[in-house]
Length: 262
Ligand SMILES: [Zn+2]
Image (tube, rainbow, N blue to C red; front, side, top):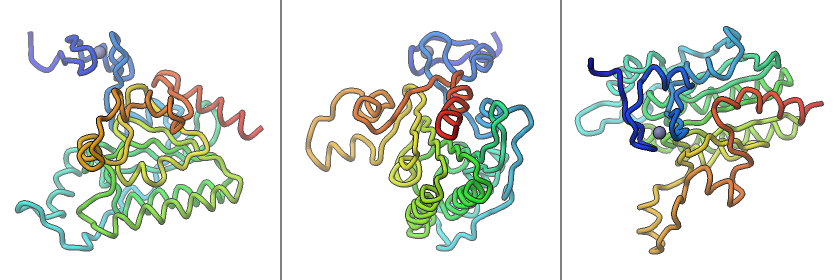
């Protein structure tokens, strides 16, 4: 058997035929484990065919701190991840249609510095929100992120305040923000825009949290409950409004837009 045709599911340990997983929207046919997908695939699954009109695709960061980590500069890392992912930053934004309804769509790219939020992701998110306000369109943001980007230090942390402030403006304008949390949604992204949705949807099994479980356990010296930081746990404890299987996301979002705006 040629290598690379099969993969092991981390959810149920079954050996899966890769093509069958792809055909199933990158969801395990056995246990419904939702695999991580790149932004382009996410957009393809969510938006009407060829409707996504991307903006600011060429926006790149300045490396404000001249950051270097273990002999690699931030600039080298950015170049390497651009090559790996085919995009220049960890978020893609643009207008799109979803079952014929106009939206502003933002999708995070896990293959670019683990979907981390630096100055460019913050700026793109804010531009998307401004566009949603100006054109009175619903905003849909799909998060997939390791959190704030350490390479940009406080500039990165500043994006948490910036994105939260602009979302408050969207709220004042009566806009609708649907936030979709996918595996993983963590750190500064969870602590800012991802949790500010009017409706917060999560994909089943997604890791959602701020700090990692080990950090929390060591800091507050308690044993954490089972399933802590899963989408299911978040739903049970009121942090998430609904769990939606990937195959139903399009129709659920279209349904929510109709419900909230008509
Ligand atoms: Zn599985």
